[in-house]
Image (cartoon, rainbow, N blue to C red; front, side, top):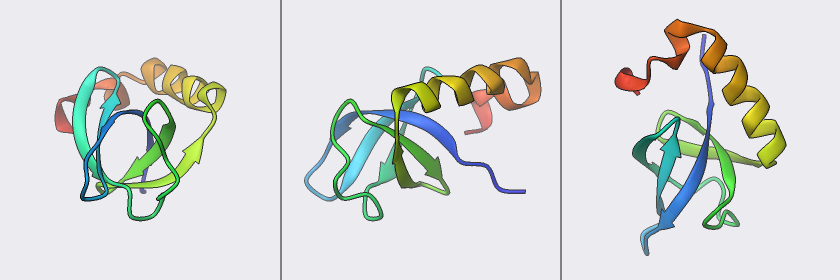
Amino acid sequence: MCLAIPAQISEITDDHLAIVDILGVKRECSLDLTPAAQVGDFVLVHAGFAIEVVSEEYAQETLDLIREIPELADVEGL
């Protein structure tokens, strides 16, 4: 099963890459599939790509569900 995780964009570089925050962990992801995404937006991240811009409410609901499942909230493997 594949899982896309909500993340908030904290920085965008010139080469269509973003630094995102996923449950407190900073990661780099590509914005090639979401060129309209901006700093502060929430995106769904899958396999190193932001695949969709989502609302903050949706992102928070999903993150709350992830926190309820300890195996998913273990972000060390992200």
